[in-house]
Image 1: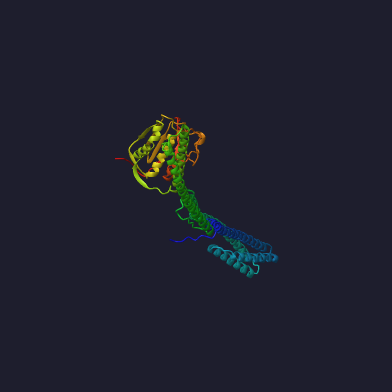
Image 2 (image 1 turned 90 degrees about the horizontal axis):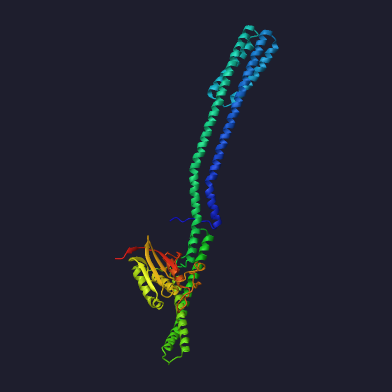
Length: 482
């Protein structure tokens, strides 16, 4: 695969991207400016030539008329000075004719101009050799009148030249317009492709950084952070990878610390519980009512301490292993019934009944984590349910999703607590009943495990008394159990 070349800095990459994007447009502007310059130059030259041709043709007509007038006056009056006026007009005619020959005339105009010059030269020679004879002068005057008609024909040809130049200019304008249109039609897609390419070059390292930061935020430290792009962004990627390794090391240290602490706490706690049980069984002798009360308080607090340790370990495991899912197919109703059976003593102590409404179907998920979700939801419902109440559990399919609803008849979740009940160690203001106070980690564990399955957990406010918690799991495979 071809290796993309990136500049050394992100700023240079942005500048290069913008330069590539505007390059076709700059080319189009320069090309269009050149085309317009060519059109303007041609138009200016054509107008100048047309004006010069028209002016010189009219000068020729005026000079032929002046020669004719001088000859006719000489024929009548016979004054030799009139011949000098004729010769002066002749010289001007020759000068104007030479100027006309330098103009870019077409072939027809050149032939007409040469014929006009030849006829005028022949008349000038004939008049010069006439010796002032009236008959020759009168014939020359008549020929000069015909020469004037030839000059007017040349003027008409000049007007035709102007019309042709106008047509040529209009055609050139149309060609330039078509050229600009097709040029833009070709360059705009190229510019768009370059913009898209530059955007991809710029967005690729940014997307890699965003993905890496998201993985770090989600606690997924297994993938190495690698960023392709300019040197400064590569360096930033290396720093993020260093941060990943540091966070991974901290997680491992935290895991070791919790395992060590739990082991160190469980050993004396087990001995303490056994001692309390022995005292409660009056193994060391009969106890007074006060001693029984002290023993009860000790037993209650050892149970609470044990639950706190277990919840801490469970929550840590939920945070550290959310990405390590072991998928298998299992019957959700059967799993829920097994979990509920584990809470039978606690439910019997409060005279609670369980209403499980579920059809038989299998899901594909992490069975242990789903069991932990159901366990914590039931524990929460038992904790806040009043004596003699009913806990309702509904399991159903909704499209490709699995919906788990757990409802109790307790005080419900206060409005000010709804946004925080899934936070670790948070305990709302609702009253609970039970021998052991909760740790505030149960619903936090539910949220972690549900999030690991790409699902959601929410509080349903439907107007009924008690709390209503709903878990939605996008099952990879849902089928009716045989």
